[in-house]
Every structure is written in structure tokens, then in C-alpha cells.
Image (cartoon, rainbow, N blue to C red):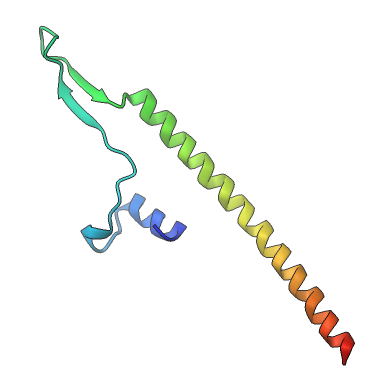
Length: 89
């Protein structure tokens, strides 16, 4: 995935071709042969999956909070360079 826009499209299911779909996680559901009533087991468990999704979203939010700060830094440095060039003339 190359951008947050593509990530959002994957979450919403708006991906145009199936080849570009990248799964975020996989859940394996099996019947437990050791259980008398053939209990269904999910791997990872619901709690593990929930934790991983929350952790992933927290990291995405952190990254997107940093991006505006970087833009301001570049804008300020650009302005300094333009002012420096204007001063030479």
C-alpha cells in the first residue's frame, strides 16, 4: 500500500481489482477435535484481534498527526530560502 487513501479504500472495500487487495489480518476458524461438541476455535482470539486493530489504528493516527507538522517545517524552510535568495538581489 502506498498511501493512506489506498488504506482507506481497502477498509471500505472500494478496491477496484482483487489483485491489489492486501489482507490486514487473517482469522483461522477450526473445529477443536479434542472437544466433545466440536467447539469452534478462532485464531487469533477476539481479544487478540481487537488489541491488534486498536494498536494499528493508534499508530495510523500518530503518523497522521505528525504529517501537518512536517508540512509546516518544510514551508518555513522554503520561506527562509526564498527570503535568502531575494536578499541576494
